Length: 133
Image (tube, rainbow, N blue to C red; front, side, top):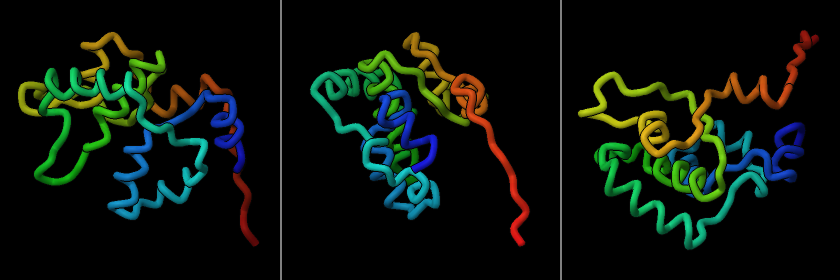
């Protein structure tokens, strides 16, 4: 389980179950890395309520035509209800009038949003490399 398991058990790192469902559709290698069940949180009533707000305010957050970013509103709704920080590699959209990215919605909603490198620094995660013989 490594460090991710330790952080999941302490409820420091989590993801909405909707992210897992999206990863399962594309058979993403990331799913293998996060298959730890405690990593994913189920939806509750508060998340569902806030999700409706997010979907109304930011309809361009998802791309249903390509089936992508469908979990993005869930990430924001969970962060709002859990008072959590969103971690993403997305950048603010160059043309938010055409496409809204996670950082755009987080900024508008007053939700903290950082990239994975910032998270690694905050959690003081260290990596080691070994040469395989």
